[in-house]
Length: 289
Length: 277
Image (cartoon, rainbow over all chains, first blue to last red; front, side, top):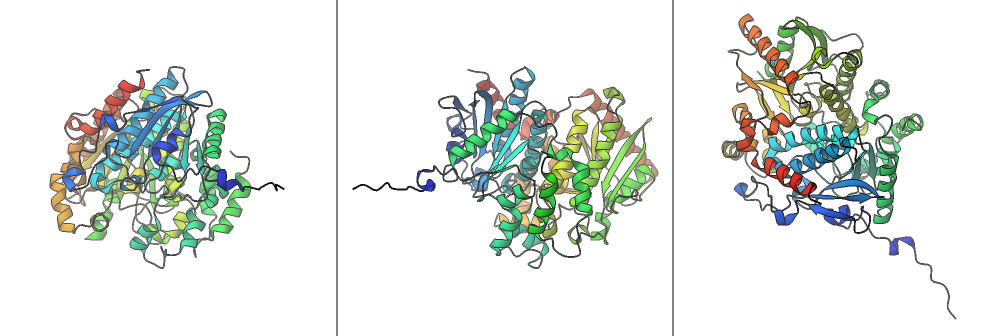
């Protein structure tokens, strides 16, 4: 007597979050149709960390993979959250800018090349402070330039999340994909508590953090596009969808009037309830993009 | 004297444009006006403190939600109005920068300040890529997300050279705490590690600046000093019009060849491997 065993989905699922940045980036490409550029054997390290007693890494925590996604040319650039918190240093930042610039060059030459940015980052690497901040400005400019020709797709999967200057890059992406385990925001809760006090933000209040920065909220309020399970296959499928859709008719960051009016309508006499805000913003975003 | 430093942006906005009142419909924290520079007119923008702002965490001159969307609105209006005219006739956009940081507030996080900041950075980038000269004048502080939102997308950046100028990713106290150092250690390190320095003359070595400017008392500029700054802005505009639309002038500058070897190495290696299929 054999009874059929029901195996729940999560048993067979391949977790995306459990992969490192390199494996995450690889998992998005068509089978066998990719190669890594300026990898660890090229050994271009941060010139600033060793001088400060911090061990550098031979890829500076940024992985670039070029290949095909759903048959179309694409490049993925991934920050490794496990190296210096995924922080943007001179080299890791320049690698991302350069890859975006090259994708733009190919796109302008008639070979539209999408970019997928895997952002697990706390922001600028403070040991390289001003070159990290400059790199973020350059990434913003390069992402903007590519966005005219091919989609720029951001994935924030977790568990580091995407904070600091790189959150602006997520903001101006053509599409942002998040999981429930991901957080997205400009200032992390600890920073707000430190700068503005515990009454402003209690960084030990996990529920509050997820209610504000969590993937479900960001997608729900229309500031990110799709909420996907922590499943490498589903995330790759979501990326293929975005590549297929191409450049959106209007990018979210071009909708200034809509959002300016929404901010004007906020009651700021007290803190804003994230759930109510989500309801208010979601109902009108539908159909916009 | 802290308050004075935060008013340097406003002082220079007034000195260069003759006005310092916000436009109807704008928050009091954003100054925007059209004024003459050389023999053309330009849009001047500045974020200033507003002690009565309805957002408590921007009252000392931080850049928040209203500031970002207001900047983006003004920039996009100029882009739309000049859409059909040739590059050499497109109006310049001058960002006067004196921002202590982005807003560190729960209201801001909840309503997506990351996205608001992105709309402003996007608007500045759109203007530059459409051919508008975008010039930043760092008249005081230029910190972190505040600078990314307002000013860091400029084709050409000017800054005064005195101790009141700070361009940095994070203020000293917080950076010391996070990197587990004392403020004194951090300052000492700044002299050895150029990108960590809080001194604008070290910042100039990174190749990100067009020019350093000087005023004896930047809080009370003389008419000669104002004229010199206007000349420098006009010079930056002319140089921007001759240059590329992207930010490559930053890493291709003479100073960057010394201080940004890592950037140049990674760009060269990636380009070589990209086309090698």
